[in-house]
Length: 163
Image (cartoon, rainbow, N blue to C red; front, side, top):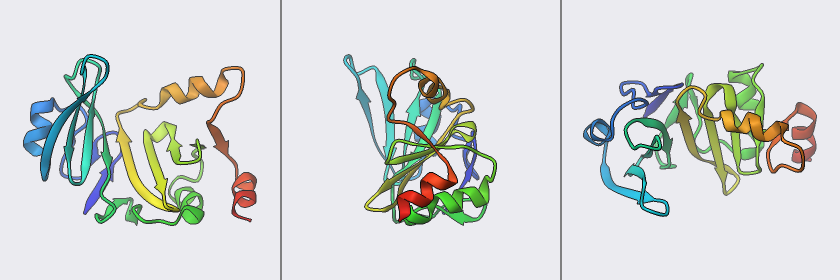
């Protein structure tokens, strides 16, 4: 079981801020390191349970994403993995009643908490915890002119979606 600590990683391991070497040393079930990008410049470390994301210089872990739907990922004693999408907003509002939730249809993001929840097959299939201000780019996208795939969720829009 992983008990999420916002801006840190999870209880017992504060992966956010660790070097790649420290992450690999402490990552349960480490499987592989892989690189993305035009010149293989962006590093990712992967285990069966989660992926570690790094800053542009690959010096510091800036986020981890839990990807194994068979594990327990809890936040304030609430099990996140497997929550049906139709219940997700109400469950998040129980945890964070005053937080705005932004969605692109698959990801539900609490920008101020640096928390993103991915929905697949109508249920939570992934949870990302980032460093403080990890999702600040979303704030910028929301105020840019023109259409955006990102939308704030209001109680009424969620009720309409579920009908």
